Image 1 (cartoon, rainbow, N blue to C red):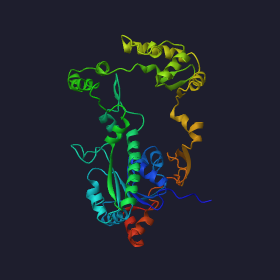
Image 2 (cartoon, rainbow, N blue to C red):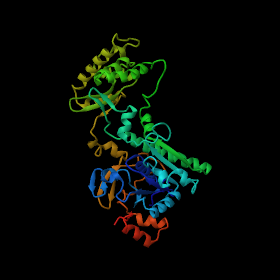
Image 3 (cartoon, one colour):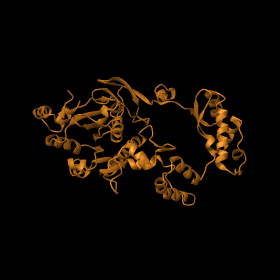
Length: 421
């Protein structure tokens, strides 16, 4: 039986994507059935060389470029550039994360392309957005983690996050933006440009904390105003963080939300409500008057929180994970084992909900990657094929763009295109 068509079947997408955000957006659209043309340099997207497996085939390319066609060209060649402009102008969607100013220089920006196709949806990923004093600057995930306040601040200084979460969040927002723009076009017939910045993606990820309530957050001004002087005086990170902690309103629930070592592993628990916290107290056999006596407040909230946390930690270490998980789950407390990422490909639950898909690459062979992340009852997303080898579809696509066989052969001989041979 034939697979049902995906929700984006019939759409042509041209992707000028590098690294993560734009390519991941393109992959999601391809999973939805769109025909996604990835325009690469003749030597390929930089991620083809990240986590190398074979020449021009790297781990970081395979995991966000499946289902696409690859055209590998040198956009400095006028004949090639004209053909690529025709491809882009004929698309339903262009997804791009050019270096600042590059799209305009090449005539591949929204203003130029919409003159030839007013229905075009142009999805751009930038570092800092399109306005403001930093609009023209380049950016990467780690730089944005540092700039936006997402770094993990420790006594030894700020540490980067272990995963490029800003880039992937931006990719998801791009795909959501494209879907929204397609819906708008369906209703109005009009295309449009949309921009997703890494900076705004970082703000979304910190939505729980990047906010200000006047009545309780006045301490923030004191802390921010003290930073320049603290650095000038050579204050240690430990001193700066201690000062920050001393100013912040304090929540007492440290013992009920976090990771705890057991006798044979580590578990995570999240007991947010007072009722669930009372159950945790009973399960662990510890004392916490703040939980069991509504209205009671300790003289020193931080000292009390540390004492309860230490008592909980000691109790958890006395029994294995399975013992605690059975009791916590029976009581309705969200809890699960803490695992290394290396364990997840074999995880029974992740496999049960279809988190992974196995694909066959024409050069690399069999490999397992993360599957499309949204499940639909009808228009299901599908990882149809592995990422393309470099330049696999160059000849086909340049022919579609109007170049004849002799022109393509000449451009290949001059190194202006990579025909995948």
